[in-house]
Length: 274
Length: 181
Image (cartoon, rainbow over all chains, first blue to last red; front, side):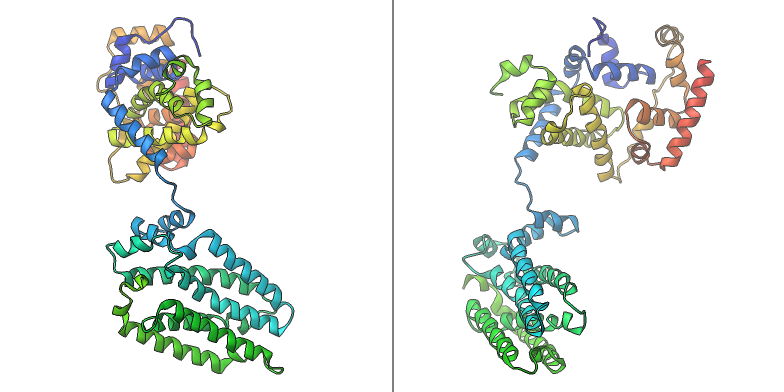
């Protein structure tokens, strides 16, 4: 934008930089400088180079900083402390790909549930296993990219374990609730996976205070699969492992596993190192 | 840095194209041209230098990320200003505890009679009329007419409801019209 050879006088420009001009002059300077390369160059001498250089370095730093992952940005947005958000976001089972896999598994199971009671049993079985698998993957040595980091983190591994477990279980529960709403004929069965899911997760954790965690999670998942398959194979009642008595049983299991965990939480320290 | 000789002569538009293609040296050249006046202009609207520097920083980060969205309408400087003044609003909102009433900052002394005459020659009496507006009205005129903010953005920047911006703008318009009639 050229306006012939008119330029802001140096004296006026200097006064403007000091804040010593009235409103009308300031407007006129600003309206001209925004489009005049010559006056822009003149202004450049009026700002301390050190200040401009410091701001430039901040710009470069911001551009070079790694972009926070989806989960980390989300956690930071809801007010989680940055260092906790980073540790949580590095949880293998909190990535988009893992949650996507869970969502697909649940979607297939929902489709199956539309085929009848056995299909529903499959859905409930998968839904109850999803958080168990998520928590297991969280601490599997080969999968966790922050395995070594978390060993050295200034945070007890029990606390990290609990944080991650809560995060993984809540993320999975959200997905499962959404899937359950898509079930045919909403009834109590839509929520029948909830207590088993918590029971299995806590039992696996409690068991891993005694035996290596891969074995613990594998054993619990295997028993669960065997029980649901055996139940579904019976001709009369495919949902036996989810009925009222079983739900009470799972409530008891949750309480017992919780107590064991509370008693033996010390053994979980440095647990993922095993 | 690596293409100093070519960037020195390039037009703002060409530099912005290069920035869209990921040329860091072109961003640096744009920064050298536009950061100084942007800093001064924002400084007139916010007394806290840290907040201003934050806004300038955010502006050039935004220029880097959205250079491809520049549509060629209007000068690059005006485009950068549009980003900058909005980043300043965000920066001020991030530091609500700070005092920032600088949008209302008024020149300490009235222009001398001599200056007044010169102003009248240059701008008709517009300059004088603007200067005689109350600080509240002048801040609204500055935010909406001269800085190009929407009523809502101006309200957020000045810490007043959007409705108040509208009524003050109306009053300013009436006063200016009367003085220039």
